[in-house]
Image (cartoon, rainbow, N blue to C red; front, side, top):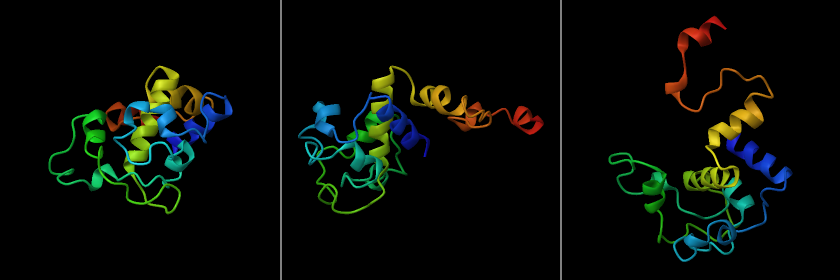
Length: 142
């Protein structure tokens, strides 16, 4: 949810365009992700890209990737699940790529952008990027 709001804010600020393609934002993935020239940012946000879901790849949960590069590597060169825009299918790969795009455009971590542009302005003090950031005593005291 926060990633989609972050994308919306970046589009509103004219820093991203929902109708630009993966080829525009990730030219290095052309030929590695099927239909990269036709998959728009809008399709990724709406899970209508056809990009395979990285968590559905063999042994994902048995031998999880160490980082986002390894996670993405698991779907590179795989056939698309469907033609871009033709269907809906949840794909974590869409939001992995969205996270990468947010960080590329802002120049810092996705969660830092979300914190500065969404959480702080809305006074959402108990929303965290990781469970490791939670100080339970502080959250409970208010």
